[in-house]
Each structure stands twice: as C-alpha cells, then as structure tokens.
Amino acid sequence: MATNEERSRWIVHGERLIYDNRWIRLGLVDVAIPDGERFEHHAVHLDRAAIAVVVDEQNRVLMMWRHRFLFDRWGWELPGGLIDAGEEAITTAAREVEEETGYRPKEIEPLITYQPMAGMVDSEHSLFLVRGADLVGSPTGEIEADLIEWVPMTEIPAMIARGDIWTSGTLIGLFAARDRLSATSG
Image (tube, rainbow, N blue to C red):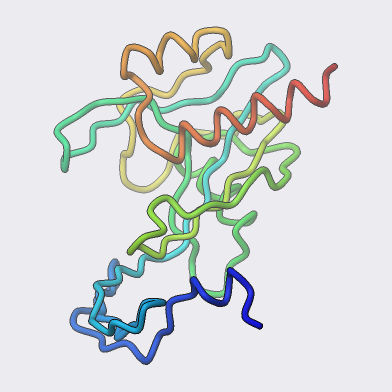
C-alpha cells in the first residue's frame, strides 16, 4: 500500500533547458502530478548562496545599507554572496563578510539552510552565525553598500516593522540567530 507521501509525489520525466548563463538557468520540467495529469512546469535554477549574521560582544549585528535596483528600494542586509564552484558554503560566508565589510570573522558556525521559493526556484541559501569579527581593512571589490554599521539587536524589530529590513535571507538569518543566541545565553 502506498504511503500518503508516495501518493502526493510529483513524478519528473525530464527537463529541457531553455535559457542558461552565469547567473540563471531556466528549464521546462516534464512532470506528472498525483492525479496523472502531465504538463511542463517552469523551473528556475540559481547558484547556491551563503549569508552571515555577524554579532559582536555588545549584541550588535553587522549590517549593510543597500539599494536593490529591481525594486528601487533601500534596506539593511547581511553580508553574503554566491558560492563559487567547489567552494564550501562556510568558506563563502567568511569570504563575503571580509570582502563586503572589511571585517574578518572570528568564530563561524552553521545556522540554517533553506530554499526561499521552493515552488519553482532552486536556490539553496545557507546561513551562518559569526561570533565576533576583526576589522582588517576596507571592503574590497565592487562597492556593495552605502553604509556598513553595527546595529543593536534591540533595534531589529522596529527596523523590520518600518520595512528597513525586508529581504528573505536577512529576515530568516536574524530570526534564526536571535533564537540560537537566546538558547545559548539562557
């Protein structure tokens, strides 16, 4: 007898690539849903990403004030970026913190991994908690933030309520870090 999970599973018969470049791969997936209906479903494949929640001894978070052109919107974000081929996510997180902020992480640990839009986008995001960081220089590479600041954790809820923090990686990272830090301090 089939389990509920087996009865609800979509069957993938194949995927046809319709667009591919360095940043995005778009495919049409030939799927059959549980009732037997078969059709093509769009699938967007993006490289994996790593994001770091950097906290200091004063319970502040290292954040960047950035403009996102697609939405013409400003907001506070955590440092992070795409994982290079063959690179471990934790290595990417540490590298991105230093490149984007000029701070070198002291202690780094896995926090949570998630898919931001699982219905049709494959873009695994790995978040890490960094405890402490040393300023080693200025950000390198392209300028990614207008401001880089240590923000007290106590200000985060009001910033979210105002809409100053609005991207999924930053929101999920901050909530997961808050929970982890609360669990380890109490």
